[in-house]
Image 1 (cartoon, helix red, strand yellow):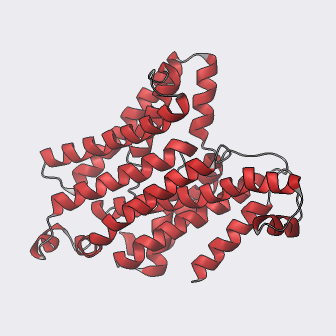
Image 2: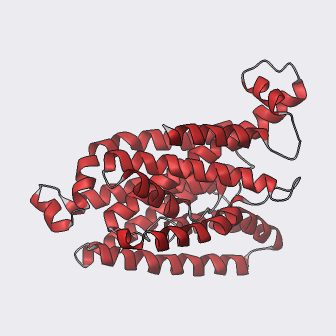
Length: 325
């Protein structure tokens, strides 16, 4: 309950802050449809509300994907960002920017689809490599780290070959930004999170059993390989949908599960929703920070999450190292 209240407060502050210094009362009246000021309504409904809602939706998707990754790999350092899935999505988007979209798609349609597709490719490769060696968590982690470096190298190659205009677009996209949020994009990310929820609910007890170790989980009747494959599919969909519209955002999927774990424990019935809520709160707060670090200047959200996420994560790990190691 406290988390919901804090997240709601962060959302309100996010809507109220921006380069145009609007009074909080005017913003609140506009949100409930009682403003009567066309300029305020245009700023709030066309710009600020989509950005604030996209922060919540993308944060929830990244927090949930990170929690799933840490659960199936039993590794506190695992996330879609650190294990190459976000890098795969970023490479897919950059490939469309450099090579151009297919004839039957616009660039706005092709970039999200390519990001989702390459996030799926990254997950498929991780799972395939793991299966070749028995699908142990250690092999999956090593495969993910190798993919991280591979996609970063391929992305650097694309940047080297790109034209000046395409290079600027890639760099800006990789910084991560919520400013191009639209109601359609919010609907897509929200639908992805909502669509993944029933599949997660079905496997909640299996994921909890997996935390006891592979052998104990098998003894309880859990088909570990199939569970990991289903989880990786969900991770690729959630990560692809998040990265596709806002670019590469680090540390949310890594830090949010740790916060949920510290506060709520390992029971997946509570832990996974808590990680989603923590991710939404963290990205919402980062959105506020991106607009207030230098008044009148919008910092890319990916830079803010990295600057805030690194020391915060170090504090979490050092303060709770016995719980993780």
